[in-house]
Amino acid sequence: MSENTRSDQLAAGVGSETLTFDGGHRPVLEARHLVKHFSVRGNGIISLKDQVLHAVDDVSLNLYPGEVSGLVGESGCGKSTLTRMLSMLEQPTSGEVLLRGERVHAKRGRAFREYVGNVQMVLQDPFGSFNPLQTIQRHIERVIRIHENGAKGTAAQERLAEVLTEVSLTPPQQFAEKYPHELSGGQRQRASIARALAARPQVLLADEPVSSLDVSIRLGILNLLGRLASELNVALLYVTHDIATARYFAKNTSVMYAGQLIESGSSEDVTQNAKHPYTQLLLSSAPDPDRPADRKRIEAIGQPPSLITPPSGCRFHPRCPFAMEKCKTTPPPRFDVGSGQWARCWLYEGSPELSADAVEAPSAANATASAAASETPAVSTPPAAPES
Ligand SMILES: Nc1ncnc2c1ncn2[C@@H]1O[C@H](COP(=O)(O)OP(=O)(O)OP(=O)(O)O)[C@@H](O)[C@H]1O
Ligand code: SF4
Ligand SMILES: [Mg+2]
Image 1 (cartoon, helix red, strand yellow):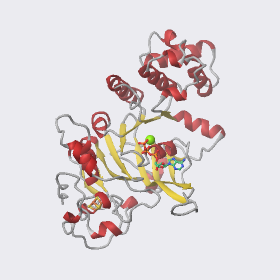
Image 2 (cartoon, rainbow, N blue to C red; image 1 turned 120 degrees about the vertical axis):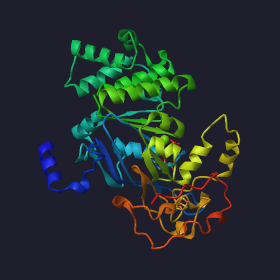
Image 3 (cartoon, rainbow, N blue to C red; image 1 turned 60 degrees about the vertical axis):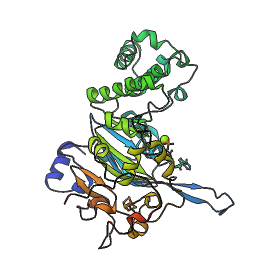
Image 4 (cartoon, rainbow, N blue to C red; image 1 turned 45 degrees about the vertical axis):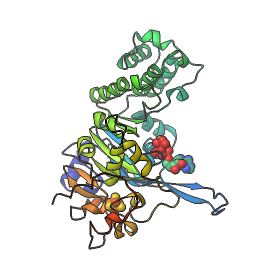
């Protein structure tokens, strides 16, 4: 569909439900109500029947050109599964992905190659994604050939030098001739970013791009990714366990828990004024040498729930010190808590409900009753009351 046709439709209000704008800023990639359920074999203890693992449940997310968006959550909450669905490496059980407003149906063949060119992954372990027997040049030239109409010779050489220079692997010829094992971890991650850039993507999905690297070089790689997103106008999803780096690096941050997004907003708001008790918990357990007492709190907060039998109602309720009766039975919708920030938590009932994925809510809530009943010590202060 042409830009004009789409603008006309918008002006007429046609199809506006399927388009999302943020202050006139149009998303390049949209996830709508993505669900991924895996069938897993029973272990013979509880059941021999196949069971369903709810890895991702009803996740909607927008990525914007030139912006870094953070996706944070603890291990096993579904971050990589969501990222793999966005990259089309994993087919959703339901829901849809839109690239520049167009629904994506790329499962194989040319459409898949085109999509992969537009939406590139940067992985945690670049070594595993390189063939040890091939030089960096061979790896990158293959991508250039596929995505630049079979470019060869001088044109391919120039493009190779360009992408290596973009990631500061200079002089480029020297790095082009290396084999993956001849590079340091940081250089290898730069080479893998160069290979992703060779496809001229509109979106980069970076799944824990620095967690396998030495702490001393992480910042350099994050700065590189941030600069490239801004200079090349690429939308960047930064997936991490580390909410502290999301604050530093991402413009917006979404927090994932047990397969669902539970809070989202500007990184500043989400990290400095977290509303959801789980986000507060993540922040309180983030390593901070000035707060040694936090370490105890991490041990005291319990384990993430089973995704085969996720808790009823709010999935965080077994660990939440503010849990109310209704939290155990009724999943909270997204409540707007101001400045574009929202939280999926009954404590904010009374704030405007975001309609896109809201569930039907019962009429009354008592935000304070029974909140203290939980035995689980977790966050140090209750969330601030919602602004009316
Ligand atoms: N192919 C699969 N088959 C069955 N279960 C899977 C599959 N892939 C992922 N899972 C399960 O889905 C859940 C989410 O996994 P995922 O890798 O997305 O989590 P994550 O948030 O990326 O974790 P981490 O931070 O450790 O990388 C986990 O329980 C995982 O075991
Ligand atoms: S107060 Fe209720 S809805 Fe909010 S996080 Fe706790 S258990 Fe979930
Ligand atoms: Mg992962």
